[in-house]
Image (tube, rainbow, N blue to C red):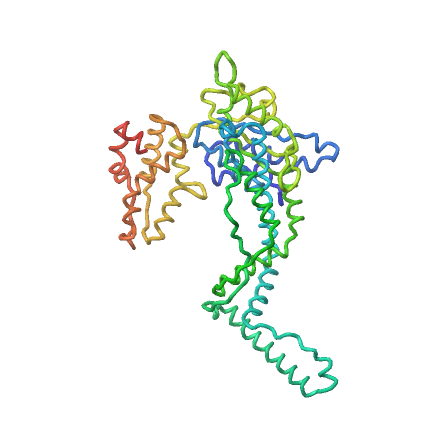
Length: 458
């Protein structure tokens, strides 16, 4: 983290995007702050302080994933979301649990690389401009002027005048280039040829990493090939900026920083962890589920995973697990795994008032999204307050009567409500369309009344 936030600041930031769930926000804020605190303690204690992993318990659509994702953005941490139930599939047994650490490391490298590219962007743009000018006005080969200077001063002066004239032309071209006056011109560039013969090396589930790594290894062993491309000046500038950026950054430094960031700031969000917990029954947990828990245990406890960027320790990666826990409960997890998730927090189901707030308040509020989408067609939606209340009431009713999918119900209702306007938007250019309670009832009431129909449509 560049500038550590206090727990109250973290909660305030999360409040901008997520409605309610104050207790969950407080607990993740403490967990994030503890990471910064750990870096401040004496070194001999630092490795002894384990991360305070979290289990978030609550139905779908109440904000569990969004809290974790926004937390990672605040901390500028590599973040990976993965369904724990994936590891119960055929082919994902045992060692493949480590793939999530490899994926997280890949994300970390990409994140640090992008930061480094951004830091050298200005220099890369300057170098790219010089390269582009070289393409537009190829520099003449350097002449042996020393001999000319001694034997023929007239020839030397002529050569110098020619060089001055070329420099003047270059400066004129530079001005035109910066103004965009040359944007329609084409130039030829040598670009890396990324085409690689398609060979199906492995074709089994869980073998994708090996397949990809082998292709990458073979690609690095073959000589780098280039191809000639004819492109317009703006695209040429982009290509050259990318090439110069890659030359300016030190990939060894990037990998070192990325691995450190993953080890000390990485966050893995294990969704649907209840699906690998034992069901309530006399015979105890299902064997395959317990097997997955035992495979996860060393990663969560702290182990070293081999990645293509080197060894990555998982001791201080923060794990946030979540699940509805309708049938299983956290106590059905194996005791060792339970002990690694000391923080338990329950997220509440959403009320009608929560739905009203979700529609209106967050920075990315649903109503603001639809207003912006249709504004691109010069159609202006105006949502009346009573219409917003009606939408929230209908979402709450459908969630109560059918499957409770939380705030996601608002998406299905809004799509149905605005489908006619969205379809006809190109023909409604310049119009202002009020969304009233009567309009909402007219479009949705029949569907709401028919429970079977609402199951399918909403």
